[in-house]
Length: 151
Image (cartoon, rainbow, N blue to C red; front, side, top):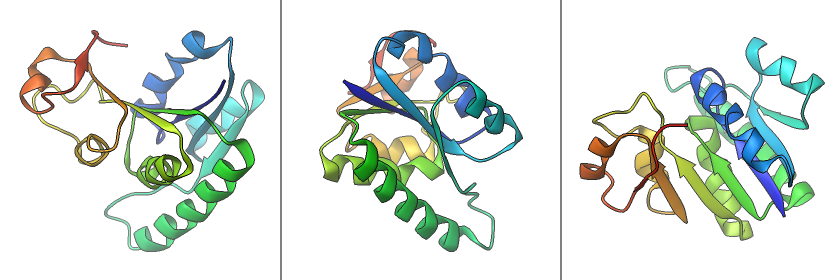
């Protein structure tokens, strides 16, 4: 089974890296934003990079469109059966396109979100095949979310 692990950079990527031992026996690859932190992954993993997408950046629309095109390319090339993501914004388009391409979507809400939903979580919650929360308090926000503890 081919698995795509996807996240933005920073803390989301840190959480995503904790999943690698669980998928090590499968054919997997990583999609993340290009940054200092993520560049070192290329030495150890098969990685595709998206443009860093920040909501307050004036180039947001351009980065969003670029990331959509990159996501189509990657999805057509790799054809993952499952996309596992810890968020954030840059992976939203990837997940929507992945769903259209027939991938199962597994979303893990950020450990930093204890009482409130993330923007990406609110949007992906409706299309995810499995949606995990890392705090029991989030059941009020995501009633169908599955709590299994923290990564």
